[in-house]
Image 1 (cartoon, rainbow, N blue to C red):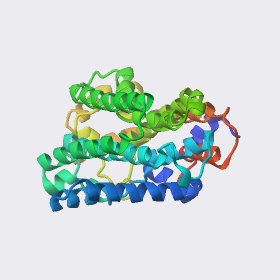
Image 2 (image 1 turned 90 degrees about the vertical axis):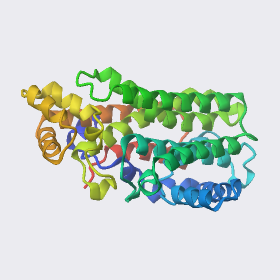
Image 3 (image 1 turned 180 degrees about the vertical axis):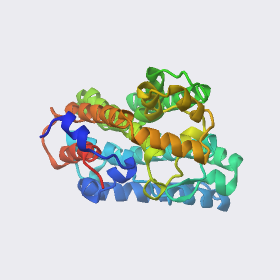
Image 4 (image 1 turned 45 degrees about the vertical axis):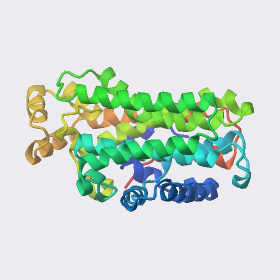
Length: 347
């Protein structure tokens, strides 16, 4: 295996969801994921008899993200305790479905806060139906997730999920408070993405260990894997918001700038640029087309780009190291492949 520094030097980061979406990574748990998908559709259909709510719920599920978080939960669960999904007495499928609903609900709320017009190349819920409907739908999906969890959630699982939702909410609130703060410290940024993004990655993986008494000893290991993967994932997403292509990302670029949010690429640019005052002036213009284009050019032609890549790779390396002690299997290999895909040179 090549050195992490060497990998950082050659890699080109693509949008995180695109990096992750490789069918070969999901093959070991494809049947389980199909069961999750069936349960999601069945639950949303059966939880309410109101046609309008069914339409909204169906639209949200049909956005078809990569189901990354439930995939990680299932892969981690199989890595430490492989069982057939037909014998899922531990509730892996329902808990994975609940995790995905929590993720979808958080995205619906995030899109309202950020006023994002599109996600996965489709109109966001608030763009299509308005802010009030989007907020209510997000709340509704959170409640559906809790209903799914109830028969299966022991105290450890409830603690993990409730703490995670609290962390995600705190992260969003801190990010809102820190908007337009041109003196944002790097550790503050890291705390925001730890809570907003890495927390649910970490919980998805930790939950896999909490499903059975014999596997609880793996909880710290799997949580570390998920946490570091989540940190890298968000850094890459922020990188793409500044340097990416909407055709690849499925999202309009420059949304962080428009929202007044300083992300790691911009913080690194401020750190290395000899023209810091001009960078600050452009950031203060909130991502109009001209300022975004100039900041993008500054970033891709500076050492801030390689510095941001290297920091993402550092988290990827920690994630990979976290699971070295788990017995080799096709499930563990898929977890390793997730980390490798974040480091690969992408075209």
